Length: 79
Image (cartoon, helix red, strand yellow):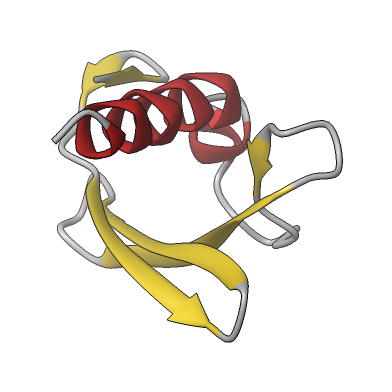
């Protein structure tokens, strides 16, 4: 997906802790270093991160990341 000014490959790993569902997400930055963070579901059903030290291109892509997670959850619920 496009994040910032580049196409980037985000990797998602679903985690379940009790009743809470989370996703670990990682993506390489421009230098090849991995940026890792968690996405959690808000009370409104959107997926967000609580991390504040992420690059701006990650923080500005939260809506796209939330949509990708919701699409994945819709796909697996139809199986």
